[in-house]
Image (cartoon, rainbow, N blue to C red):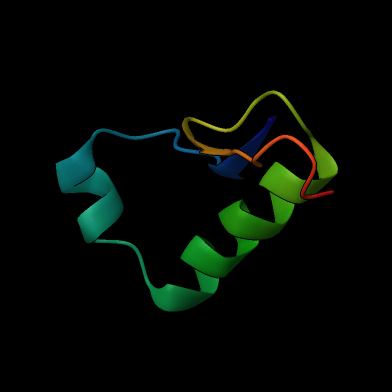
Length: 51
């Protein structure tokens, strides 16, 4: 199982909705550079014996 941040989210949803796509992409890139600080996360699971 692995946990990864997807996006740094410095604003509430309404504020994030008003940002341009370039800023959204920048927050996405920051999440990669700052693991563990992503506001939204996802989990990856694997079946035992499947790598």
